[in-house]
Length: 480
Image 1: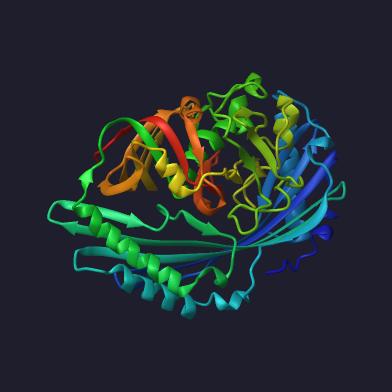
Image 2 (image 1 turned 90 degrees about the vertical axis):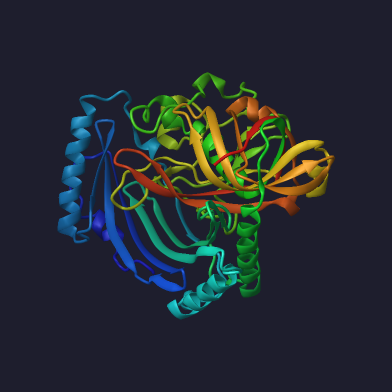
């Protein structure tokens, strides 16, 4: 929806002696649709709408959010934000000026080719019921579900130094899941690993025949896993599919490079990072074929945007180039505090939260290898798809990840299916064992709707894209 309130008029209602004032208005609507075991269980709609008033006073930022969109309501919020800034200035570790909020003007709209009305309850419920029926390939499929959530967001930002930004987002979360059981044995297969299929698109995303074919495949693979042997244990090569590379990038790169975390802002809640300020420009994070980008400009990826929530223009930037750590995930404030080059990733989860350093689209750039060439290099190893479980320490360093579906690789060929494939490692040694990067034909775009960080907690949407990748000499193990 287009925001009808004239935000500049509300800006004029602010009457505090601040160096800078910004208003960030956000309207968001969530429309979940879900079929579980043949029954519609989610057909609601919820909305939220409000404005965050931000002020800079005595070198500190103060924030106060309000759903009262009247001039009086915004004026009251500004007074409270100003008081916060005044109190913070008595305990500050850094004094900011207006350079922390540069002035930009512009617009952004999610790409979609069909009218939003095509994402109707009728259209989506029919598709989801058809998908559910295709998941039920056997009586051994004891539970199955299909879901889609439509998220519509309108964002407007104006400031006293001339920023004027309007962004319109249309986002989809989609998932299919089938659980098979036979006696004590039970296995679950999903479409991309626990809501990993998230995009900025419209109804054109849903090719009915492709969705139904995938539903049938997921049901068949859940059955296949019931009779599969456990994944072997030992040091071996692994080829990791893009839907699991998403989790690998998210945990061992994305969170580790958030500059506010490196500066210590997260230590008491979500942990620190093994990365230090002096590592930038020096640390050999991975092998020379590792190229990681921050790219909120990629069309249709889940966290694409033109400006962050501080009004900074977003551009594609290398975080890691040819294996060397070159740039952090730090917005304008963290760049000023740390002296590091950063990116436009100052993001909030809504109108009632202050922005902090967050991931957006963090991607592994494609290489030159075909999928068959990656598999062909492996004498003894495992191919893994779709995240099932994850664990990583407070420094984003030691990790252990599990996948839903595996295939043995023997003498350069995929052979039998294995269940419960898991692997573990330490972030930089693991990435330095990157031996092969798939080409664009192996490239997949995924995302997550539930990345948590901050106090008070903020759950935010993140995108990740990657080709299939080959890692050598990785600790692999089986079991649930």
